[in-house]
Length: 455
Image 1 (cartoon, rainbow, N blue to C red):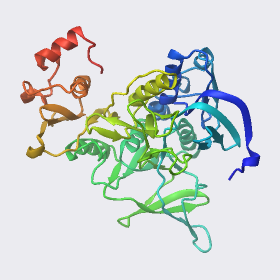
Image 2 (tube, helix red, strand yellow):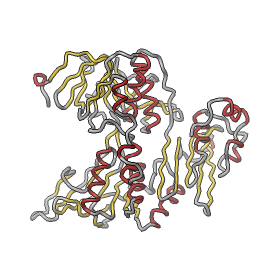
Image 3 (tube, rainbow, N blue to C red):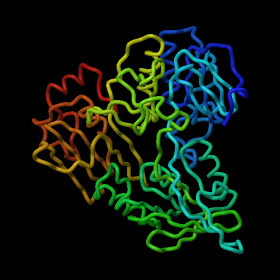
Image 4 (spheres, rainbow, N blue to C red):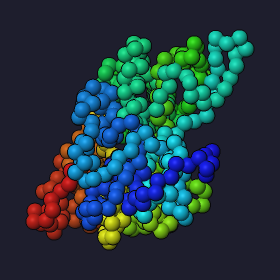
Protein backbone atom coordinates (compact mmCIF):
# COMPACT_ATOMS: atom_id res chain seq x y z
CA UNK A 1 0.00 0.00 0.00
CA UNK A 2 1.27 3.49 -0.86
CA UNK A 3 2.11 5.47 2.25
CA UNK A 4 1.24 9.13 2.70
CA UNK A 5 4.89 10.20 2.42
CA UNK A 6 5.28 8.57 -1.00
CA UNK A 7 2.39 10.43 -2.59
CA UNK A 8 3.21 12.90 -5.35
CA UNK A 9 0.73 15.70 -4.75
CA UNK A 10 -0.30 18.31 -7.22
CA UNK A 11 -1.05 21.74 -5.82
CA UNK A 12 -3.46 22.42 -8.66
CA UNK A 13 -7.14 22.29 -7.80
CA UNK A 14 -8.98 20.47 -10.58
CA UNK A 15 -12.57 21.59 -11.00
CA UNK A 16 -13.83 18.32 -12.45
CA UNK A 17 -12.17 14.92 -12.35
CA UNK A 18 -13.78 12.10 -14.30
CA UNK A 19 -12.71 8.51 -13.60
CA UNK A 20 -13.35 6.66 -16.85
CA UNK A 21 -12.94 7.57 -20.51
CA UNK A 22 -15.84 5.76 -22.15
CA UNK A 23 -19.51 6.51 -22.86
CA UNK A 24 -20.51 8.01 -19.50
CA UNK A 25 -17.25 9.84 -18.86
CA UNK A 26 -17.06 11.55 -22.24
CA UNK A 27 -20.77 12.41 -22.23
CA UNK A 28 -20.23 14.00 -18.81
CA UNK A 29 -17.35 16.09 -20.16
CA UNK A 30 -19.67 17.36 -22.89
CA UNK A 31 -22.35 18.06 -20.29
CA UNK A 32 -19.90 20.07 -18.21
CA UNK A 33 -18.86 22.12 -21.21
CA UNK A 34 -22.49 23.03 -21.95
CA UNK A 35 -22.45 25.22 -18.85
CA UNK A 36 -18.79 25.71 -17.96
CA UNK A 37 -16.41 26.53 -20.79
CA UNK A 38 -13.37 27.33 -18.65
CA UNK A 39 -13.29 25.01 -15.62
CA UNK A 40 -10.42 22.51 -15.47
CA UNK A 41 -11.57 19.05 -16.63
CA UNK A 42 -9.35 16.00 -16.18
CA UNK A 43 -10.13 12.43 -17.24
CA UNK A 44 -8.27 9.53 -15.63
CA UNK A 45 -8.30 6.30 -17.64
CA UNK A 46 -6.58 3.04 -16.83
CA UNK A 47 -6.64 1.97 -20.50
CA UNK A 48 -4.02 2.50 -23.21
CA UNK A 49 -6.39 3.82 -25.86
CA UNK A 50 -7.79 7.31 -26.25
CA UNK A 51 -11.35 5.93 -26.33
CA UNK A 52 -13.38 3.37 -28.26
CA UNK A 53 -16.88 2.03 -28.69
CA UNK A 54 -17.08 -1.03 -26.44
CA UNK A 55 -19.99 -2.60 -28.36
CA UNK A 56 -17.67 -2.80 -31.39
CA UNK A 57 -14.80 -4.78 -29.87
CA UNK A 58 -16.25 -8.13 -30.97
CA UNK A 59 -16.78 -6.73 -34.47
CA UNK A 60 -13.11 -5.76 -34.51
CA UNK A 61 -12.21 -9.32 -33.54
CA UNK A 62 -14.43 -10.63 -36.32
CA UNK A 63 -12.90 -8.24 -38.83
CA UNK A 64 -16.17 -6.46 -39.58
CA UNK A 65 -14.75 -3.09 -38.48
CA UNK A 66 -11.18 -1.83 -38.57
CA UNK A 67 -9.27 -0.34 -35.64
CA UNK A 68 -9.54 3.21 -36.99
CA UNK A 69 -13.35 2.91 -37.05
CA UNK A 70 -13.74 1.83 -33.43
CA UNK A 71 -12.92 5.21 -31.89
CA UNK A 72 -15.91 7.51 -31.34
CA UNK A 73 -14.01 10.63 -30.24
CA UNK A 74 -10.73 11.78 -31.79
CA UNK A 75 -7.91 13.89 -30.32
CA UNK A 76 -9.66 17.01 -31.55
CA UNK A 77 -12.52 16.39 -29.08
CA UNK A 78 -10.18 16.63 -26.09
CA UNK A 79 -8.39 19.64 -27.52
CA UNK A 80 -11.53 21.55 -28.50
CA UNK A 81 -13.10 20.95 -25.08
CA UNK A 82 -9.89 21.69 -23.19
CA UNK A 83 -9.84 18.28 -21.49
CA UNK A 84 -6.67 16.94 -19.85
CA UNK A 85 -6.69 13.18 -20.55
CA UNK A 86 -4.34 10.88 -18.63
CA UNK A 87 -4.13 7.33 -20.00
CA UNK A 88 -2.64 4.32 -18.19
CA UNK A 89 -3.71 5.95 -14.93
CA UNK A 90 -5.65 3.66 -12.62
CA UNK A 91 -7.25 5.17 -9.54
CA UNK A 92 -6.32 3.24 -6.42
CA UNK A 93 -8.48 5.11 -3.93
CA UNK A 94 -10.42 8.30 -3.35
CA UNK A 95 -10.37 10.38 -0.21
CA UNK A 96 -13.97 11.53 0.15
CA UNK A 97 -13.31 14.01 2.96
CA UNK A 98 -10.16 15.68 1.60
CA UNK A 99 -11.35 15.30 -2.00
CA UNK A 100 -8.32 13.57 -3.50
CA UNK A 101 -8.12 10.85 -6.14
CA UNK A 102 -5.00 8.70 -5.69
CA UNK A 103 -3.58 6.70 -8.60
CA UNK A 104 -1.51 3.52 -8.45
CA UNK A 105 1.57 5.47 -9.56
CA UNK A 106 1.23 7.48 -6.34
CA UNK A 107 -0.11 10.69 -7.87
CA UNK A 108 -2.69 12.57 -5.87
CA UNK A 109 -5.26 14.72 -7.71
CA UNK A 110 -7.33 17.24 -5.79
CA UNK A 111 -10.84 17.91 -7.09
CA UNK A 112 -13.86 20.13 -6.53
CA UNK A 113 -16.26 17.71 -8.23
CA UNK A 114 -15.72 14.03 -9.04
CA UNK A 115 -17.53 11.69 -11.42
CA UNK A 116 -17.09 7.95 -11.00
CA UNK A 117 -17.60 6.47 -14.47
CA UNK A 118 -15.22 3.55 -14.11
CA UNK A 119 -17.46 1.02 -15.84
CA UNK A 120 -17.47 -2.68 -15.12
CA UNK A 121 -14.87 -5.41 -14.74
CA UNK A 122 -15.15 -9.08 -15.70
CA UNK A 123 -16.00 -11.67 -13.09
CA UNK A 124 -13.21 -14.26 -12.78
CA UNK A 125 -14.34 -17.53 -11.14
CA UNK A 126 -12.14 -19.63 -8.94
CA UNK A 127 -11.20 -22.76 -10.87
CA UNK A 128 -8.71 -25.47 -9.93
CA UNK A 129 -5.66 -25.54 -12.22
CA UNK A 130 -3.68 -28.73 -12.84
CA UNK A 131 -0.24 -28.52 -14.45
CA UNK A 132 0.01 -31.77 -16.36
CA UNK A 133 3.71 -31.57 -17.22
CA UNK A 134 4.92 -31.03 -13.64
CA UNK A 135 6.35 -33.89 -11.65
CA UNK A 136 3.96 -33.62 -8.72
CA UNK A 137 0.83 -32.58 -10.63
CA UNK A 138 0.69 -29.40 -8.58
CA UNK A 139 -2.47 -27.36 -8.43
CA UNK A 140 -3.31 -23.71 -7.93
CA UNK A 141 -6.26 -21.39 -8.41
CA UNK A 142 -6.70 -18.48 -10.84
CA UNK A 143 -3.16 -18.48 -12.22
CA UNK A 144 -3.02 -15.31 -14.30
CA UNK A 145 0.04 -16.49 -16.22
CA UNK A 146 -1.75 -19.23 -18.14
CA UNK A 147 -1.62 -18.52 -21.86
CA UNK A 148 -4.79 -18.97 -23.90
CA UNK A 149 -7.27 -17.77 -21.25
CA UNK A 150 -8.86 -14.38 -21.90
CA UNK A 151 -11.75 -12.14 -21.00
CA UNK A 152 -13.37 -10.08 -23.76
CA UNK A 153 -14.53 -6.75 -22.34
CA UNK A 154 -11.88 -4.29 -23.56
CA UNK A 155 -10.22 -3.30 -26.82
CA UNK A 156 -6.93 -4.67 -25.52
CA UNK A 157 -8.63 -8.03 -24.92
CA UNK A 158 -9.91 -8.09 -28.50
CA UNK A 159 -6.51 -7.27 -29.98
CA UNK A 160 -4.72 -9.81 -27.78
CA UNK A 161 -7.18 -12.60 -28.66
CA UNK A 162 -6.92 -11.87 -32.37
CA UNK A 163 -3.13 -11.98 -32.15
CA UNK A 164 -3.19 -15.21 -30.13
CA UNK A 165 -5.49 -16.93 -32.63
CA UNK A 166 -3.28 -15.98 -35.58
CA UNK A 167 -0.01 -16.85 -33.84
CA UNK A 168 -1.19 -20.24 -32.58
CA UNK A 169 -3.48 -21.10 -35.52
CA UNK A 170 -6.48 -21.71 -33.25
CA UNK A 171 -9.53 -23.24 -34.94
CA UNK A 172 -11.79 -23.89 -31.96
CA UNK A 173 -12.67 -21.86 -28.89
CA UNK A 174 -14.49 -22.56 -25.65
CA UNK A 175 -16.58 -19.86 -24.00
CA UNK A 176 -17.41 -20.06 -20.31
CA UNK A 177 -20.73 -18.25 -20.06
CA UNK A 178 -23.77 -18.14 -22.32
CA UNK A 179 -24.96 -14.66 -21.40
CA UNK A 180 -24.71 -11.51 -23.47
CA UNK A 181 -20.90 -11.22 -23.39
CA UNK A 182 -20.53 -14.91 -24.15
CA UNK A 183 -22.93 -14.72 -27.10
CA UNK A 184 -21.35 -11.54 -28.48
CA UNK A 185 -18.04 -13.40 -28.31
CA UNK A 186 -19.60 -16.43 -30.00
CA UNK A 187 -20.96 -14.18 -32.75
CA UNK A 188 -17.40 -12.99 -33.52
CA UNK A 189 -15.78 -16.42 -33.46
CA UNK A 190 -18.49 -18.00 -35.61
CA UNK A 191 -18.10 -15.08 -37.99
CA UNK A 192 -14.44 -15.91 -38.61
CA UNK A 193 -15.21 -19.58 -39.17
CA UNK A 194 -14.23 -21.03 -35.80
CA UNK A 195 -16.24 -23.72 -34.06
CA UNK A 196 -17.21 -23.10 -30.46
CA UNK A 197 -18.08 -24.78 -27.20
CA UNK A 198 -20.35 -22.76 -24.91
CA UNK A 199 -20.50 -23.77 -21.25
CA UNK A 200 -23.49 -22.30 -19.42
CA UNK A 201 -24.49 -22.84 -15.79
CA UNK A 202 -28.19 -22.17 -16.46
CA UNK A 203 -30.60 -24.38 -18.40
CA UNK A 204 -30.36 -22.18 -21.53
CA UNK A 205 -28.21 -19.51 -23.12
CA UNK A 206 -29.09 -15.84 -22.54
CA UNK A 207 -31.08 -17.02 -19.53
CA UNK A 208 -31.29 -13.56 -17.95
CA UNK A 209 -33.34 -12.12 -20.82
CA UNK A 210 -34.54 -14.99 -23.06
CA UNK A 211 -37.15 -17.65 -22.40
CA UNK A 212 -36.62 -21.27 -23.45
CA UNK A 213 -38.26 -20.84 -26.84
CA UNK A 214 -36.12 -17.86 -27.83
CA UNK A 215 -32.94 -19.51 -26.54
CA UNK A 216 -33.87 -22.72 -28.31
CA UNK A 217 -33.88 -21.05 -31.72
CA UNK A 218 -30.36 -19.71 -31.22
CA UNK A 219 -29.10 -22.93 -29.68
CA UNK A 220 -30.37 -24.96 -32.63
CA UNK A 221 -28.59 -22.69 -35.12
CA UNK A 222 -25.31 -22.82 -33.18
CA UNK A 223 -25.40 -26.60 -33.01
CA UNK A 224 -26.18 -26.85 -36.73
CA UNK A 225 -22.75 -25.40 -37.43
CA UNK A 226 -20.89 -28.15 -35.60
CA UNK A 227 -20.60 -26.29 -32.31
CA UNK A 228 -21.64 -27.47 -28.86
CA UNK A 229 -23.54 -26.04 -25.91
CA UNK A 230 -23.09 -27.62 -22.48
CA UNK A 231 -25.95 -26.40 -20.29
CA UNK A 232 -26.38 -26.86 -16.54
CA UNK A 233 -22.61 -27.06 -16.48
CA UNK A 234 -19.42 -25.24 -15.60
CA UNK A 235 -15.65 -25.76 -15.66
CA UNK A 236 -14.32 -27.37 -12.49
CA UNK A 237 -10.73 -28.04 -13.51
CA UNK A 238 -8.36 -26.50 -16.07
CA UNK A 239 -5.38 -28.40 -17.48
CA UNK A 240 -2.17 -26.60 -18.38
CA UNK A 241 0.72 -27.90 -20.48
CA UNK A 242 3.90 -25.88 -21.01
CA UNK A 243 2.27 -22.76 -19.62
CA UNK A 244 -0.75 -22.92 -21.96
CA UNK A 245 -4.27 -24.17 -21.42
CA UNK A 246 -4.67 -27.62 -22.95
CA UNK A 247 -8.11 -28.65 -21.71
CA UNK A 248 -10.65 -28.64 -18.92
CA UNK A 249 -13.07 -30.87 -17.02
CA UNK A 250 -16.75 -30.00 -16.78
CA UNK A 251 -18.95 -30.45 -13.73
CA UNK A 252 -20.51 -33.51 -15.36
CA UNK A 253 -17.07 -35.12 -15.59
CA UNK A 254 -16.52 -34.66 -19.32
CA UNK A 255 -13.00 -33.67 -20.36
CA UNK A 256 -12.51 -31.43 -23.40
CA UNK A 257 -9.36 -30.35 -25.18
CA UNK A 258 -8.97 -26.60 -25.38
CA UNK A 259 -6.31 -24.17 -26.59
CA UNK A 260 -8.38 -20.99 -26.23
CA UNK A 261 -10.83 -20.22 -23.42
CA UNK A 262 -12.88 -17.04 -23.10
CA UNK A 263 -14.21 -16.33 -19.60
CA UNK A 264 -17.51 -14.51 -20.06
CA UNK A 265 -19.67 -15.16 -17.01
CA UNK A 266 -20.50 -11.49 -16.52
CA UNK A 267 -19.24 -8.16 -15.27
CA UNK A 268 -19.59 -6.28 -12.01
CA UNK A 269 -19.28 -2.55 -11.33
CA UNK A 270 -15.64 -1.49 -11.03
CA UNK A 271 -15.71 -0.11 -7.48
CA UNK A 272 -12.57 -1.68 -5.96
CA UNK A 273 -11.01 1.73 -5.35
CA UNK A 274 -13.92 2.97 -3.23
CA UNK A 275 -13.26 2.42 0.48
CA UNK A 276 -15.88 0.43 2.35
CA UNK A 277 -18.53 2.73 3.78
CA UNK A 278 -17.35 5.79 1.85
CA UNK A 279 -20.37 5.76 -0.47
CA UNK A 280 -23.73 4.04 -0.51
CA UNK A 281 -23.23 0.92 -2.61
CA UNK A 282 -25.42 -2.06 -3.42
CA UNK A 283 -24.29 -3.89 -6.54
CA UNK A 284 -23.08 -0.55 -7.91
CA UNK A 285 -22.84 3.02 -6.66
CA UNK A 286 -26.30 4.27 -5.68
CA UNK A 287 -27.28 7.63 -7.18
CA UNK A 288 -30.31 9.91 -6.99
CA UNK A 289 -32.28 11.39 -9.88
CA UNK A 290 -29.47 13.88 -10.51
CA UNK A 291 -26.71 11.23 -10.54
CA UNK A 292 -25.42 12.39 -7.15
CA UNK A 293 -23.94 9.79 -4.82
CA UNK A 294 -24.33 9.76 -1.05
CA UNK A 295 -21.25 12.03 -0.74
CA UNK A 296 -21.27 15.74 -1.51
CA UNK A 297 -19.73 16.76 -4.86
CA UNK A 298 -19.33 13.16 -6.01
CA UNK A 299 -21.40 11.74 -8.87
CA UNK A 300 -21.57 8.37 -10.63
CA UNK A 301 -22.76 7.32 -14.08
CA UNK A 302 -22.68 4.42 -16.51
CA UNK A 303 -22.02 0.76 -15.81
CA UNK A 304 -20.74 1.50 -12.31
CA UNK A 305 -23.93 3.25 -11.18
CA UNK A 306 -27.37 2.16 -10.00
CA UNK A 307 -29.89 4.47 -11.65
CA UNK A 308 -33.66 4.32 -11.87
CA UNK A 309 -35.23 1.35 -13.66
CA UNK A 310 -38.58 2.78 -14.78
CA UNK A 311 -40.18 -0.67 -14.99
CA UNK A 312 -39.23 -1.80 -11.50
CA UNK A 313 -39.55 1.64 -9.94
CA UNK A 314 -36.24 1.22 -8.11
CA UNK A 315 -32.54 1.75 -8.61
CA UNK A 316 -30.78 -0.95 -10.60
CA UNK A 317 -27.48 -1.45 -12.37
CA UNK A 318 -28.29 -1.52 -16.11
CA UNK A 319 -25.02 -1.73 -18.00
CA UNK A 320 -25.87 -0.61 -21.53
CA UNK A 321 -24.29 2.07 -23.71
CA UNK A 322 -27.30 4.39 -24.37
CA UNK A 323 -28.11 4.73 -20.68
CA UNK A 324 -24.45 5.37 -19.86
CA UNK A 325 -24.48 8.29 -22.30
CA UNK A 326 -27.71 9.72 -20.85
CA UNK A 327 -26.47 9.38 -17.30
CA UNK A 328 -23.16 10.97 -18.25
CA UNK A 329 -24.83 14.02 -19.79
CA UNK A 330 -27.05 14.48 -16.71
CA UNK A 331 -24.15 14.15 -14.27
CA UNK A 332 -21.94 16.53 -16.26
CA UNK A 333 -24.58 19.26 -16.45
CA UNK A 334 -25.32 18.95 -12.75
CA UNK A 335 -21.64 18.95 -11.79
CA UNK A 336 -21.35 22.28 -13.62
CA UNK A 337 -24.22 23.80 -11.65
CA UNK A 338 -27.22 22.71 -13.69
CA UNK A 339 -30.39 21.03 -12.51
CA UNK A 340 -31.07 18.22 -14.98
CA UNK A 341 -32.99 15.13 -13.91
CA UNK A 342 -32.32 11.57 -15.04
CA UNK A 343 -35.70 10.06 -15.88
CA UNK A 344 -34.53 6.45 -15.76
CA UNK A 345 -34.41 3.71 -18.34
CA UNK A 346 -34.79 0.00 -18.90
CA UNK A 347 -32.65 -2.87 -20.13
CA UNK A 348 -32.30 -3.33 -23.87
CA UNK A 349 -29.71 -5.26 -25.84
CA UNK A 350 -29.22 -7.05 -29.13
CA UNK A 351 -27.04 -9.81 -30.51
CA UNK A 352 -26.95 -11.54 -33.90
CA UNK A 353 -25.88 -15.17 -34.16
CA UNK A 354 -25.36 -16.80 -37.55
CA UNK A 355 -27.63 -14.32 -39.33
CA UNK A 356 -30.38 -14.56 -36.70
CA UNK A 357 -30.91 -11.08 -35.22
CA UNK A 358 -32.31 -10.85 -31.71
CA UNK A 359 -33.30 -8.15 -29.27
CA UNK A 360 -34.62 -8.18 -25.73
CA UNK A 361 -35.87 -5.22 -23.76
CA UNK A 362 -37.48 -4.58 -20.42
CA UNK A 363 -38.74 -7.34 -18.12
CA UNK A 364 -38.86 -10.45 -20.29
CA UNK A 365 -38.87 -13.38 -17.88
CA UNK A 366 -41.92 -12.48 -15.81
CA UNK A 367 -44.49 -15.27 -15.87
CA UNK A 368 -48.19 -14.70 -16.47
CA UNK A 369 -49.95 -13.94 -13.21
CA UNK A 370 -53.55 -12.80 -12.87
CA UNK A 371 -53.27 -11.18 -9.46
CA UNK A 372 -50.51 -8.90 -10.73
CA UNK A 373 -52.23 -8.27 -14.07
CA UNK A 374 -49.38 -9.85 -16.02
CA UNK A 375 -50.14 -11.18 -19.51
CA UNK A 376 -47.72 -12.88 -21.88
CA UNK A 377 -48.48 -12.99 -25.61
CA UNK A 378 -46.38 -14.93 -28.13
CA UNK A 379 -46.07 -15.42 -31.86
CA UNK A 380 -43.85 -18.15 -33.33
CA UNK A 381 -43.37 -18.82 -37.05
CA UNK A 382 -41.29 -22.01 -37.41
CA UNK A 383 -41.06 -21.67 -41.21
CA UNK A 384 -39.48 -18.22 -40.96
CA UNK A 385 -37.74 -19.08 -37.68
CA UNK A 386 -39.14 -15.94 -36.05
CA UNK A 387 -40.39 -15.52 -32.51
CA UNK A 388 -41.91 -12.66 -30.60
CA UNK A 389 -42.89 -12.45 -26.96
CA UNK A 390 -44.64 -9.45 -25.43
CA UNK A 391 -45.03 -9.09 -21.66
CA UNK A 392 -47.88 -6.81 -20.56
CA UNK A 393 -48.68 -5.40 -17.13
CA UNK A 394 -51.85 -3.39 -16.57
CA UNK A 395 -52.32 -3.04 -20.33
CA UNK A 396 -48.84 -1.61 -20.81
CA UNK A 397 -45.90 -3.33 -22.49
CA UNK A 398 -43.04 -3.97 -20.05
CA UNK A 399 -40.97 -6.54 -21.92
CA UNK A 400 -40.31 -7.80 -25.43
CA UNK A 401 -38.23 -10.57 -27.01
CA UNK A 402 -37.78 -10.62 -30.79
CA UNK A 403 -35.87 -13.32 -32.66
CA UNK A 404 -35.37 -13.54 -36.40
CA UNK A 405 -37.06 -10.23 -37.22
CA UNK A 406 -36.33 -7.10 -35.17
CA UNK A 407 -37.34 -4.46 -37.72
CA UNK A 408 -40.07 -2.97 -35.52
CA UNK A 409 -38.11 -3.05 -32.26
CA UNK A 410 -38.22 0.74 -32.03
CA UNK A 411 -42.01 0.71 -31.92
CA UNK A 412 -42.03 -1.60 -28.89
CA UNK A 413 -39.29 0.42 -27.19
CA UNK A 414 -41.47 3.50 -27.59
CA UNK A 415 -44.48 1.74 -26.11
CA UNK A 416 -42.42 0.72 -23.07
CA UNK A 417 -40.71 4.09 -22.63
CA UNK A 418 -43.92 6.09 -22.92
CA UNK A 419 -46.06 3.67 -20.87
CA UNK A 420 -48.76 3.56 -23.56
CA UNK A 421 -52.09 1.89 -22.81
CA UNK A 422 -52.34 -0.81 -25.50
CA UNK A 423 -55.70 -2.29 -24.46
CA UNK A 424 -57.30 -1.22 -27.76
CA UNK A 425 -54.65 -3.05 -29.83
CA UNK A 426 -53.64 -5.83 -27.46
CA UNK A 427 -55.05 -8.60 -29.64
CA UNK A 428 -52.55 -7.72 -32.37
CA UNK A 429 -49.59 -6.66 -30.24
CA UNK A 430 -47.56 -9.85 -30.71
CA UNK A 431 -48.30 -10.39 -34.39
CA UNK A 432 -45.32 -10.47 -36.74
CA UNK A 433 -46.76 -7.66 -38.88
CA UNK A 434 -47.60 -5.37 -35.95
CA UNK A 435 -46.45 -1.85 -36.90
CA UNK A 436 -47.21 1.86 -36.74
CA UNK A 437 -50.55 1.41 -38.42
CA UNK A 438 -51.68 -0.83 -35.54
CA UNK A 439 -50.76 1.62 -32.75
CA UNK A 440 -53.39 3.32 -30.57
CA UNK A 441 -54.79 6.34 -32.42
CA UNK A 442 -53.69 9.02 -29.93
CA UNK A 443 -50.17 7.63 -29.70
CA UNK A 444 -49.96 7.38 -33.49
CA UNK A 445 -50.84 11.08 -33.78
CA UNK A 446 -48.10 11.88 -31.27
CA UNK A 447 -45.57 10.06 -33.42
CA UNK A 448 -46.63 11.92 -36.53
CA UNK A 449 -46.47 15.42 -35.02
CA UNK A 450 -44.08 14.73 -32.15
CA UNK A 451 -40.57 13.39 -31.84
CA UNK A 452 -41.04 10.19 -33.84
CA UNK A 453 -39.84 6.70 -33.05
CA UNK A 454 -36.37 6.00 -31.79
CA UNK A 455 -35.13 2.75 -33.33
